Amino acid sequence: MNKLLKINHIENRIFGLDLLRFIAIFMVLLGHSLMFIPQEYKKDVFKFMLDGVSIFFVLSGFLIGRILFQIILTKTLDFKEILSFWKKRWLRTVPAYAFILLILGGATLLFVPENFPATWYEFLYFSQNLFRERPSFFAESWSLCIEEWFYLLTPIYFFFLVVKVNKKLAWIVTTILFFIVVITLIRYNMYSEKFAHYTTTPDFDTRSKFKSAIEFLIFPRLDAIMFGVLGAIVSLLSPNFWKSNLKYVMLLLAIVLFFAFKSTLILGSTAFEMTIRGSLYSLSVLLCLPYLSNLHIAPNRLTNIITFTSVVSYSLYLVNLNVVANFIIKLGILGGEKFEASTDPNWPVYFGLFWVLTFVIGFLNYRFIEVPFLKLRK
Image (cartoon, rainbow, N blue to C red; front, side, top):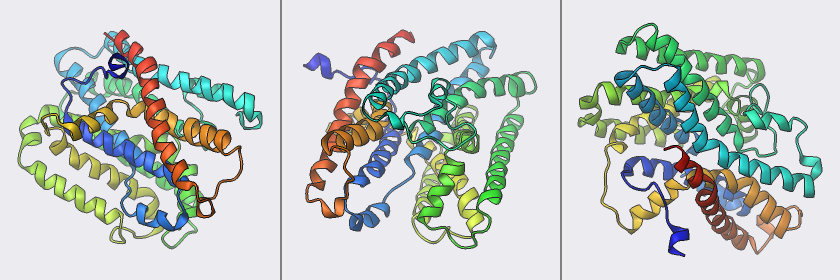
């Protein structure tokens, strides 16, 4: 049993980044678990929720950016290094994704064939939300597509614009800022075509439509990851600044911004709400990184729970919504009947089952699918 429960790759981790990843996955799971609680409780929960996926994006950009720029600073970013980078990233992400995709595809064909997507082949190369709204099948994979396209394009981007043109810090930062501005303008143009007729702060339904039509697409969200890359560059080229006491000021500013997002302080026009707010949210996460990337805490029971959750967070993300919530609970336990928590006295049971099954199945997916392929990266 101890061997089964053993977590690999847990040494030499930065607790602050594990904490950030823990917050991100907790917010994702909490958001999805709300389908099993009565409507009257949701407003109270929303007051404390953060955008977990945006946190994942910025953190991913930071970690991958550091890997790429360490190559740029110490080696030559040639095709051999880029190919090695792709192999390591895809061994990390693709096997677990492919396994869950296979399970979901088989279960859908067997039990609810009408829900099987006609464009199923797009899931094989992460293009299901490249040019159109994400399908309901394996809906949470929308963010994985953004990550995978980032892994594919970023090394090429840096190879041509950094290695072949100019290695100076000013040039590097300028190209990244330009990229962020361009993506923001693309998002604004898409908003203008679809939602410009809204003149007040959008309601929940409007925001949901916006997410489906714009925020869940691949290219309009790549700027979030680039905020993390920007942090990676600063941390490597200006380590003294990154570790200075200014990190406390930036953390305080980030907390203020996060608070503002949960109040009316930062809500202006609909255009601002739907195009700029996401960029400012990513900036807030970036401002946390100097403090968190330098945060080291001796292991104890609480930190071990946080680290454990961080380690298995990818599998938790893959299984929680469609595997656990939709198939096991809604289709399996509830028999496909429409569930309404406000009128079902057993809602706490389903809510608890969601969390327990997500962690059990997520851990098993990590242990038997992720770990063997992680070992191959060596």
